[in-house]
Amino acid sequence: MTDVTRILERVEHGDAKAAEQLLPLVYNQLRQLAAHKMANEAPGHTLQPTALVHEAWLRLAGSDAPRQWNSRGHFFCAAAEAMRRILIERARAKARLRRGAGERPLNLDEVTVAVETAPEELLLVDEALDKLEAFASLNGPRFYRLPVNEARVTLRREPASVPERIGEGEFAVAPFRAGESLPWRLAG
Image (tube, rainbow, N blue to C red):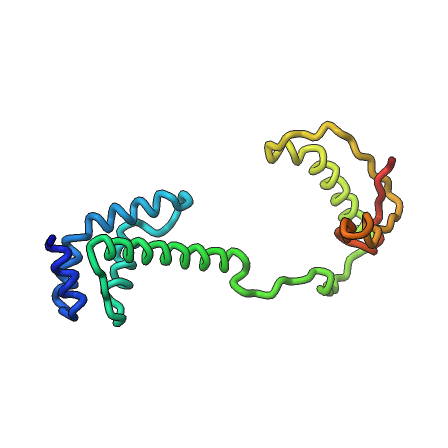
């Protein structure tokens, strides 16, 4: 029976000092385990393996829940699981922040903006947007290093309605902007 196993038995029986003796014995292995877990994470992760070890240790030894580790292997499995949960919680928190942390999305169709603008300025803005659209459609693939589509599509500036459904039966789909009128149409 190893020292770690003996100390784990003492921890299981409620010896508070045993947990203090356990950390120095298992720290290097926990650090290696954390480094291995972190190797699978995306680059630029803000959590370091040492911090992951400390946070996992607090969950394992710092909680009031009874600790029942049958063996050294069982302890390291529990440590690996604690580290995995910590990484998942951090990823979920980061994703929540990226998606607005629970903020309700703003529907731009419902926003009313009152600005006094001369009609000439509106025409200039419309012209600038048309030029931007033309530039982006011609240069966008090169800018994003995407393959350039050699097929040509011609758009005409005339109103067109988007159909409510395309196809029939179970294969019918509702297109994006179904039922809306667009200021342009595809030229055949």
